[in-house]
Amino acid sequence: MKTVICAGTSTSGKTAVLKQVIKKLIAKDYRLAFLKIDVQYAEEDELFKQEFGIPTKKVYSGELCPDHCNVMVLGDAIEWAAREKAQFLLVETAGLCLRCSPYIEGSLGIVVVEATSGMNLPRKIGPMLSLADIAVVTKIDLVSQAEREVFRSRILEAAPNINIAESDALHGIGLNPLVKKIIESPDLQFPLFLRGNPPVGTCTICVGKKEIGWKQHFGVVRPLENQLFYRGE
Amino acid sequence: MQIKKITIFGGYGKSGEKDKVEQVTFKMGQVVSIVGPTGSGKTTFIEDIELYANENTPSMRKVLINDTAATEDFSSNPSDHPIALITQHTNFLSDMQVKKFLMTHASIRGSSSIETIVEETLDFANQLTGEAIDVNSAMTELSGGQTRALLIADAVIIGNSPIILLDEIENAGINRTRALELLKRYEKIFIFVTHDPRIALLSDLRIIMKNGAMQKILVTDDEERRVVEEIKKMDDFLLELRTHIRDGEKLTEQHVENRLRDLGYLS
Image 1 (cartoon, helix red, strand yellow):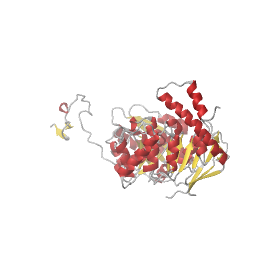
Image 2 (image 1 turned 135 degrees about the vertical axis):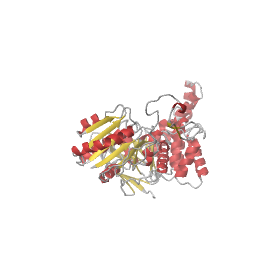
Image 3 (image 1 turned 45 degrees about the vertical axis):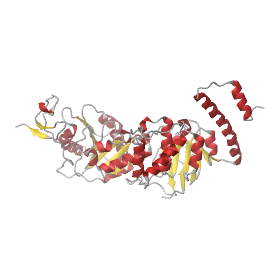
Image 4 (image 1 turned 180 degrees about the vertical axis):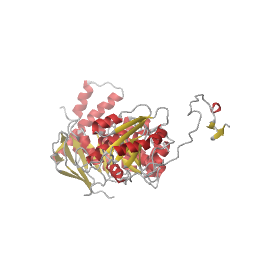
């Protein structure tokens, strides 16, 4: 089985891209399963189940960081997709944290970025972009060609070896190279590992201390004018 | 790539009706207009060209540039894309300063003399619009007319796109006559979607659209070229009245009558 992990900030068009991808893969008679990971609300699973009749699941990460949640649940999800006899498991992540990336070794990582998000987005989203295999640029019909060019060059600056597919995902235009790449992607090799290192995650904010200001916290802390340091026993 | 011509093979209109024009070719240096009522498929037609369609858009049209169809892979870099589309909706969304953005674009394009090319672009844009562009303002602060003017200037000069598609620029507050004059100096294929008789008749040929499908091609003949002179006169007269109104002046029956007499419409 092959797994495709799709990331991208909210409203970037992940769902529109995956919808077209699913449509094109089904047309080629592939069997698919779809997992949506989000924080507190998502309906893509129901939409895709209804429209395409494929097995779908959704997970709300709730109190957990959504990309941590991804690490936790993905093992089970792959077993589930295998039981459903899927050839492809498509995972749509929540796409929130710009310090994490949800991609796993030996599977395809797709980041969806909207051309309308400003010239600096590729410089802002960190490993979500730099560790992806393919950047799908959406909403290209809404911006000037000049800005498309600058946007593209900034993507390549952040991720020099990435493949870029410029698309109008609402109309399914420009996505055929992506579908080809998904079909050609390798089968999963176990054990599975995250591609990037998650950021330091042991902090007192994570465990529920809500006071503002680093002096109220322990573990790895950070003042405004200084680097990270460890405070505590 | 040296662009010599672009060929469009017909596909289907909105209700599945076949394009009556099976094939049309535009040659380098030609000015083409796409005409037809609102909703007749003009914009879809030029979008097919912009997308370098290869039977992969809803219309199933196919576009060949120098007899070659598009290949689908990740190598398609918009800098190599020979076609620039400027529509009524195309906007700058970046809040970079005008000058900084143009310089960034020029450097991505590998221009050798960035300062010069940016100057030329701004100069071109300023000739198209009534209000000079402040190079230190953010691109998102430009007026509609300034935005359109700068988009066109950037596509023509920095982008140096050999094929330029312009969707209803007559509504964008730019000087149409000046635009046509300036554009014709550059050796390119210009394709206008237009409702403007003047632009349509100053084109070498025009395609008539209806219900999403290409109906026929008309080549501008000598008689139409004479007619366009008359249209120019009337159009300029209306523009003159517009200037009066813009300048806060009242229009009198006497003034209009005098001007019509000057133009030879009243005896």
